[in-house]
Length: 211
Ligand SMILES: N[C@@H](CCC(=O)N[C@@H](CS)C(=O)NCC(=O)O)C(=O)O
Image 1 (tube, helix red, strand yellow):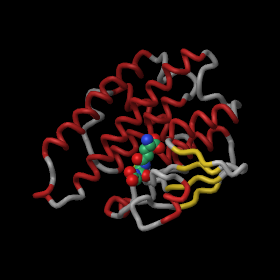
Image 2 (tube, rainbow, N blue to C red):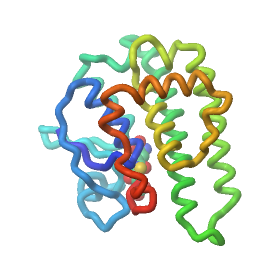
Image 3 (tube, helix red, strand yellow):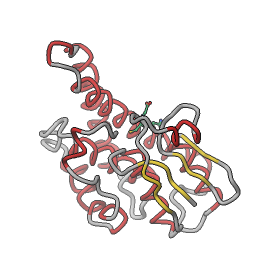
Image 4 (spheres, rainbow, N blue to C red):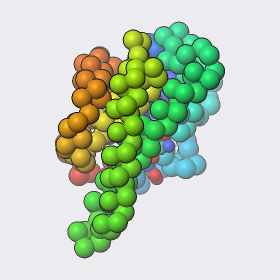
């Protein structure tokens, strides 16, 4: 199993954590979608990472599809409930966390423009998505039914990767104020080996073309 991307990308980190938690051996093939690197476009016509390359020669892309593929083919260490509706509810929170990542990445891209070229309305709109998303996740984490349950699930992983990206990119330093349950959840997850092994490489990447 090969995974295309880098840990600077929260979507790549999400898939790597799933692979590690399920005990699936894989090689990370370092590839940056924004660089002049044909590898990504050859594997995914959309030119985005992550791409999972299976031993059968199939390529899977878009992290929710990859997560679903891994759940179907490696059901041991289940990350979704068996009941389809209960599983969908967890995947709804995966989508919410992925949306927070999308907003975080949009902010990073906007902030790479010169200060005069940055659109304040775009930045505000994306920050609001993150604020509302994290508020909703705090409520779900407090309920402990789909997120922050006794056993690790796909939503937990996606949420911690989204928060990891917000921290790494220093997008909303005060996000943790008034969100104590979410703070406790991600701190517990960041202590797991799967998260420690997939931490974004270095602050230097903040200023590189990698995302
Ligand atoms: N919905 C996709 C998003 C993946 C994504 O946007 N990846 C970024 C890296 S963080 C990328 O490859 N961007 C390149 C581009 O948009 O052209 C997923 O969940 O995998």
